[in-house]
Length: 468
Image (cartoon, rainbow, N blue to C red; front, side, top):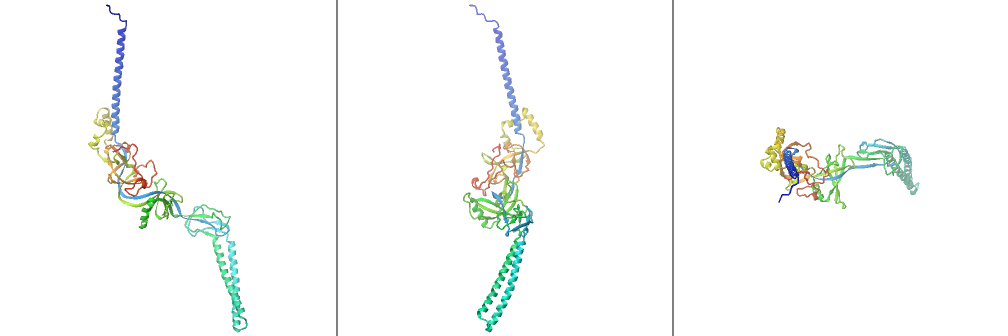
């Protein structure tokens, strides 16, 4: 049989389809190869960046005497506060001090019109003179009647009457002397003096007004600022320890800091502990006294109080910002000179190894980085597990892990791992960068103190920090 006739142009269309398929396959292969090369290049660049020395800030581990203290909030209170009132009635003539002036005990503050009290004094003195003359006459009469009675001229009753009259006039003299003394006292009260050393507050009454001894507001308020007191509360759990120290005769030092807890204001000592615990809060009030020679403390000022319980000598101290927490516990990054050991280099990620192998674009980038840093001393970091004794504010006391004088990283840990190359720079702040949350609770007083019991601030890992 004859073969069926094929349509014209079918062979041509078949070749076109095959050509399109070949072009699509070739484009796909080329795209895949290009993406693979770009990923390889990016991985090498990232490896080069990972192996680049990281700038960090460091501080040296210190060995020094470390105070163990409790931190509480306190209120500055004037050591003495006196509301100066008038003790007599009258017109206020003048106020001899200005508001805010420092005054001494016995210094003249104000004057009240003394004229009425001078007149009362003169009247009492005149009465005394009259009664003294009368008493002299009565005394002479008594002597005469006594002589006449002895001679039998007058009766005994008449002699006794004259003697009683002399006694009455003598009693009037004593009353007149007391009235004179009272008039002098009232006259002295017209000059108002300061009862204490202190600072004058705002004036309550202006000159020209009539003042009374019964006025409630007073004329002036004098506040003693040197010395000055700080009242703060102490949890009852710490009371036995504090009382034990005070009963043994130890003078407990108290330091006052500003609201942020960063600026030291003054140093004083514990004066007394209140005689009862507040049942609503479970705390007891403690009063500390400060010399306040520079006037850094002011009444009703809120301060952070540090009650120092002991001084721990030769303590290993690091900033709290240097302490990190990982799966194996607390650790720090210690800066070591030279290149990292081979075992740390072998532990690096594969991409980083490829960068150090010196192939392709990564090798060129590595050569550029090495050329930029080859004149600088080489340093790397080593992960060091440490044991924390306790935390005191921004300082941490360690019992093991580092030695005094070793440099540790306080800023830049988020980019580090064990064996990372670093460019160390000494930190301007020996305590390290300030934490994000500036509020610090009271610290513990012993190695076995737990955070809830002592209010101890536990060191937290910085964001992004690598675990050991």
